[in-house]
Length: 429
Ligand code: ACO
Image (cartoon, protein in one colour):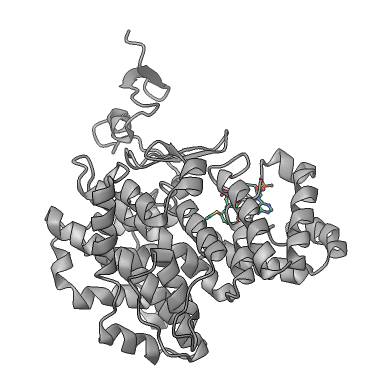
């Protein structure tokens, strides 16, 4: 018998089946042959939250959750965080290789060409209430881009796909900055192509009356690193959403809006906002232990802790913790950092968190850095969505060009009522 097989005996029938094993998986469809009779549909696997289901093969991001390893296209996140720029990393993630100098220059030029927003999108942003959550505005504006670029619906044309990818990477930063300006009632700052992607974003956010605004280089570098760390994270909730919507061949703006909507939830990309609110609620070091006891008794969660894949320290969190120190040297010390550091120490020594392998994740310290940069907590998830756009579009592209992919359509186990007759309203009890 070949070694790379799995033998399954169905005790209902006594039959044995040999299923091939490839890449540490069996094909779910191979289970379908396991039947009790001709009218049996065949066996399926049940996996809520897809916790143990590989929905795709991918060459983009490698994670070893037990070891705390993250690599984009084979490159360790630590090296990219230290040496790369966000746009260079985006190129790597989307196209698979680091660009040559000429490719990078062209890529930066192409993205810069698309940073302006059509006046209709600017007007759309302006119509939202002054206190609308920036993530809600962001999602709506992204979805609306599909009205301006109907050509995006031709997802089968490689040149067209590249054009839309450049547009998406460029416009998310402008939309993000405009949501912030709108919340404060300030005029929009138009893009400046003499700056880096991150520098331009900071200028669109923060330029007030200065004629020659220049971003603080330490903050620019810190945000560049944060963008690299957030660029992709394989098949998480929002990426899966991008792939699922894209699998119907919907235009990429609609898929991107869906992915951003998935990111908006507090169990995913809005955790950084929730972390800051949690730290503010705890307030001082004295309140940490009672807070942890509350969490352990099942009342709430320790936000910024735990991860579906990492059962070890999130490698991004280590880098972010280091950046936080550099940023606070420029912006001044934030006492909430002391609360965060102590909270982490206490949790890491507590059996509740140790036994469940709950470690700080990417969101635990990022909110503190954003706050030090004067960003309101409501903007934190938007700051996650900007760089994650590159991961979303790379995964979308990979899905569209993968011959094995089909429209996403999972199965269910129906446990509802059996057939019954309609009862008229006057006869219902
Ligand atoms: N605080 C307290 N307990 C927790 C936490 C937490 N942050 N996370 C998990 N647990 C506990 C659960 O209560 C459960 O305990 P039990 O076995 O006694 O019932 C156990 O750990 C396993 O938890 P699950 O919810 O099954 O783990 P899952 O892998 O489904 O969830 C998740 C992962 C959603 C990230 C979770 O850890 C969580 O809610 N964390 C807080 C929110 C957060 O920081 N999200 C950001 C994640 S990173 C990102 O999306 C960018």
